[in-house]
Amino acid sequence: MPANKERYQRLVGKLIYLSHTRPDIAYAISVVSQFMHRLSEDHMDVVTRILRYLKSSPGKGLMFLKNNQLNVDGYTNTDWAGNVSDRKSTSGYFTFVRGNLVTWRTKKQKVVALSSAEAEFRGMAKGLCELLWLRRLLTNIGFTPSFEMNLFCDNKAAIDISHPIQHDRTKHIEVDRHSIKQNLDKKLFGAHLSNQKTSWQIYSQRQCPQGTSTTHLTSWA
Image 1 (cartoon, helix red, strand yellow):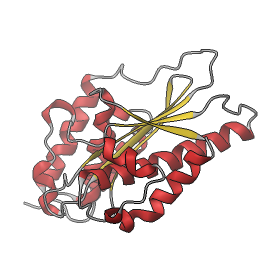
Image 2 (cartoon, one colour; image 1 turned 180 degrees about the horizontal axis):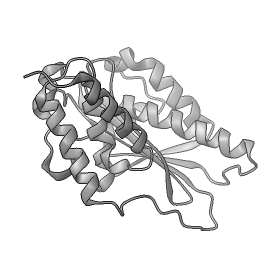
Image 3 (cartoon, one colour; image 1 turned 120 degrees about the vertical axis):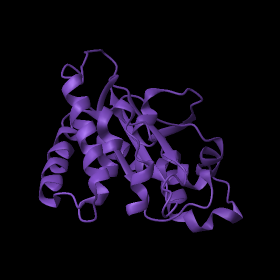
């Protein structure tokens, strides 16, 4: 039985707007938004589960605290080959300014990554772009960061690629590598290995609210 496409598109559009203040639903929304024109009742069921989750957690949101240091930190993570239909990876990043979460995003990569290191590296490139944008924004409003920005990633191979060592097997991502290396040389940010399994993985991995599974949805892409 086909789902109501107009109702589905209307609900998902409102959820996308809501995800600007609810990062806990960012990944789930990024998945359901891929089926705006090719949907089924399964997709509508997932949207309904998201709505039920939101109804059960009205008090969740973001809290901003004041502190003295103007640190800018970014975290990236990638679900390598997580899409079962095309084996594309999903990248996620989020950034903190003065310890407060200010931006976040999760998005499926445009090309198939041949290794987890390549997928993580492409995610690092997107995280770096966000850090540079934040630095320009803060500088324009008179709050230039006083310390080197930090970019955290949990893949050591991806961090090694970002340093000035040419790897024969990474020439297909050379543009991203040079972009990251250039900003490393300028001391605008530092790349760091993160071994902690923290809540920021919700931006790239299948951890949807209230047991919502998105694995079966990818077959409709």
